[in-house]
Image: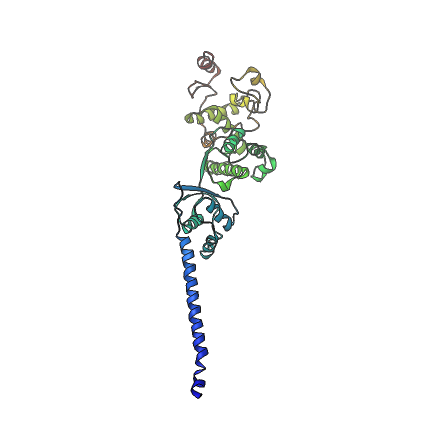
Length: 347
């Protein structure tokens, strides 16, 4: 009786010990199962795709849950809660980038996660040639799906937007939409952003060309004349010489008489210039006005801007196309008329 009473206190201890052991075993099994569950996801690859690379587009502001869904629909990962768990554990929930990405199929979820946290989105090159008008530039961007053409044209002539961009003395961005090759990403989608990018590129080039010039050249007058030089010739070697001719004529108070200015802004203009067009009193027609046009007639590139800022000094006052992309230059009207007869009227 006494021995039995002495052993009884050990029984609860043994019971507690067994409970602890079983609990520990259970928790160990849970941890192992959880590790297997997470590990199988982390290292799992989708080898069922028929392509080597998948393009995914993640819109700006997409949540981690939304990113998981997009990747799942693309067949890159399994869309379940484990993607969110790993994003949280690895501290990348707020670092997954928006944009368009090319991701190799067979990539593990962790590799996809790392790519979205570090990689640069895909870039698409859009080239805007020199000498185009607002409408022509708008058409290129719109054709490749980057903006709405009508919105682009409207914004390029919106006074309040132009002032936001730092211009106070112009009514249109004609001349300041810098022609270049732009590497765009899908998260840059938007007409305003595209125009802002072009204007920023113009300011950058302008600064490069003028930072050593003293006194500082007039931006508006330079861009107007550069737009005419750009339209007059496609031969880069001739631009400084043509710019010099225009400078000479302006100093002498002569009309520039540049054909491209005649048709700018004239609806339906095309083909050979007519006598009535030459006589039309528009604010751009340099056969009528004895000065620069009221604004640029195109968007000039760096070479045309540089030509106006650094023209070739000469005594030339005239030039005429030789129909091969180059021009015949003359110092007097008599020689110019002979060149016109030789290269234009006989043709």
